[in-house]
Image (cartoon, rainbow, N blue to C red; front, side, top):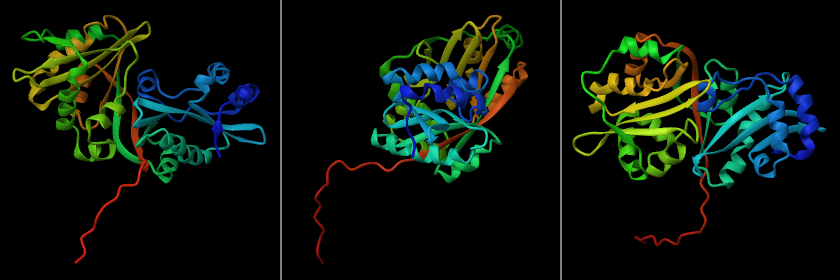
Length: 312
């Protein structure tokens, strides 16, 4: 069985770091910054000393030796959990099945309806994830440009200004409607079809990310741009309604405006090929591909409900 990471695991983490392979899983932020990397020993040693932090970390150990480390927790709400990181001892790849399967217990106990994972395409972990109950949701590509300035030059100046405003909480219903209109039904059925499901499973670029929306003349929302800039580069995501398709070049220009000479990266799901094609035209290169997978969890019934059946 897996257990929580404990302060007494610090020596074991040092030994584990010396014999573990690259990470097997990453978040959206991780994918935008190069994907899974080697085990961050110092980071996990710090987590082990923080009771609040180690509650989101689990280990698989045998006779005091750590063979696997997993970090997981809610995405944006309690209904949707995500495995953020998974590290395995080099000779223990089969333990991925146990870790991915057993994390369902604490997730379900915390009220989660589903768990998401993001793994590199063609990863050996895919088979273990399927056996643990995770189903493919969609594939996404990470696109990178050395500078946003070059892409902006190729894009040119839009023939009319794009007027955006900051996102507010009252936009959620309209944004969910836009999301439902452009997301394939197969994806929505597996990831949740209610406003609360969508809100809980939304991914953020960072706590300091800025969200901007495009209003359509009829009051509906036509696009959502999420931006985050740090010293190492500029990241963004872009989603738009079908009716706002003609605004895509202008929306992309807005997303790139703050990047200047910094490296720029974004992710595009496979069902949004128009954006992928436009990015390639502007000089972006496809750096990596990831499989987004999800596992549905049984929902607990808190109270039995009486029902009357007709007798014929």
